Picture (tube, rainbow, N blue to C red):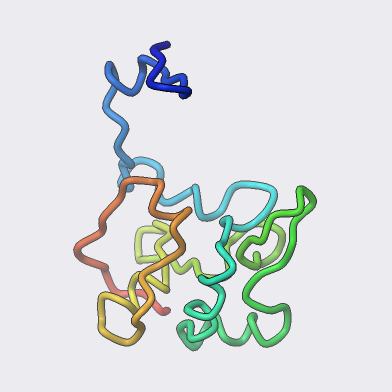
Length: 129
């Protein structure tokens, strides 16, 4: 550990490469967990204009909810998938919000908590959003 001002930083940050390997993990961060992705209050409006397939679920349960820890998070489906997940032909989980943004159909990229995983998918295979 090193200390920078009042923050302790693991040496792993300096010694290891932290990079999402989507081909390896298949987007499991959008599926596993006990609640959805953490949201900022101001992100909810951007998500309410989500892709059509997500809208079906959003109409039933909303874009977000308060989880057991009191955090605002994205809605989940069947107790696991983020409401905005979609899968490509090889079963890789991808973000329908990011896909819609890249296609110019949405002006909101995705929640900042999702940016914490350093992934940038330039090309989507065919899949339903």
